[in-house]
Amino acid sequence: MHSETVTQLSASLRQRKFSATELTQSLLARVERAQPELNAFISIEAESALAAAAAADRRLAAGDAPALTGIPIAHKDLFCTEGVRTTCGSRMLANFVSPYDATVVARLRAAGSVLVGKTNMDEFAMGSSNETSYFGPVRNPWDLSCVPGGSSGGSAAAVAARLLPATTGTDTGGSIRQPAALCGVTGLKPTYGRVSRFGMVAFASSLDQAGVLARSAEDCALLLGVMAGFDTRDSTSVDAPVPDYRASLDRPLQGLRVGLLQEFFDKGLDPKVEACIRAGLEVLRGQGAQLKEVSLPSLPHSVPTYYVVAPAECSSNLARFDGVRFGHRCENPRDLTDMYERSRGEGFGAEVKRRIMTGTYVLSAGYYDAYYLKAQRVRALIAEDFKRAFTEVDVLVSPTTPTPAFAIGAKMNDPVTMYLNDIYTIGANLAGLPGISVPCGFVGALPVGMQIIGGHFTEERILNVAHRFQLETDWHKRAPEGYR
Amino acid sequence: MSLTRRDIDNIAHLARLALTEAEIPVYIDSLSRIIELVGELDHAATAGVVPMSHPLPGLTQRQRADAVTESDRHELFQRNAPQAMAGLYLVPKVIE
Image (tube, rainbow over all chains, first blue to last red; front, side, top):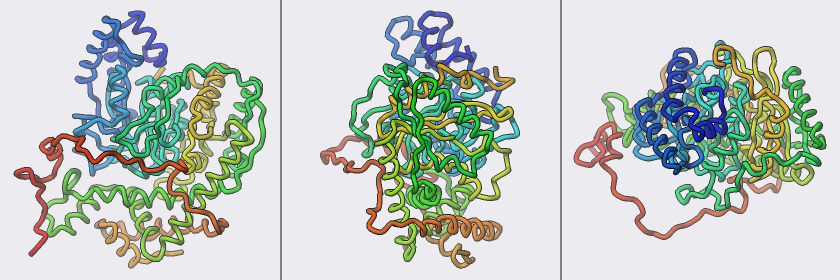
């Protein structure tokens, strides 16, 4: 059962090959067995999962079963989940039990999915290696000495290790696509505004977007169809109809104009990763796509732009953690200021404090124009570059990451080197564009991801390209040894 | 650009973050490097460019009718409070 995709499981459940209860029991056992080795979960909700599976079996028997009925999934632990601990990978929220469901959680629940647990992540989604989690690092199932990527590292590892067929994630600067690449799974970050952010613990509100990690583009299309759509409770949610993302998956690529992001085939790119991407591009060309080099001259400014905008928004968003209404409070505060400062100093980990302080600095008197407004201007240039590119091509293709997964501990002492992991993914967030990472080869035992970026609200197109690619390749079907 | 201990003390206070002595040199070093990284933006020509604050241009903030849409669930919400009593959040004395 564990080797089936969501699409296959959905068919198997309807054909009564096994029940939702049997499926949930089987995957829960895998989740629990893998936990000491991978640490992919922060919470495992066996009891409520089995209750949900039993309810799913009743719906299947009654013939009243929506698309995801009986499909076991897990949410990144920054989606508020009613009655379940929602920690955001932080000591600050280690005991926080959400009083309500995020819209993503509610929609996936209403579609019949079975929530098995909450996945590990970098603290407040700030990190590219899952090493900043208060609950310890996640290990990459392809090589246990390596990181899974981040910040949705637990979500990626759980799908890669065949613990679950799909998980949710969030992507502020690459946090779905980067771990998807490093773990050899398919990860989709939709257009900003496509999926409601209501109930997602906010990091950088002009960049954050919810998405999905799964084993195929087809499954991503299925889940996105459930997650996407207008929500009055998110004021940046876009009121646009949700297409049937599966309907256009098979569309031929004949005549598709594919742009190669020239700036991303740079000196920082591992030549072995580049070889995988070039081979992937040939697969697209073989299906009739036309390849064309495209230059986005402002794109090399993405990383510095992001590391002004994201920390600035983070310092503002995380001001809510004051030790008063929820979250960690220090012992015996002397006065209110002491309570704020020590509660926050103790509750937040090193990287979160670094981002809050960076944001505080760039927003402080005398620096606002030089850093924050400047970054917002450069952000406009980057968005303009993408807009121009999409008048010439239909999609842009690049590596997802400059290298495969790196060793746990290798980059923890140098934040700037860590930040450069997201060099190829950040641009899509700054411009609000959808992107998907698909497995496209291996360097040694480690998977490599190819990124496909589209214009605003062209998820149908990038899913179509990713699906056609997966019809011709089997990289996405490979499983790590020990988890097959 | 290199930040000083005074800079870090000031930023930490503005951000209401108590730092330990051991953390301070780490942040002097890493924040200096981050500020150097973002300083690269000086090389971008941005004269006349309008700052972009939202990724979807043209999208305006929606408004809604000023009507009550939520029910009172303060008891549930206060279960997550570090200290609450009689429906109130407790904090250290603010006024002497």
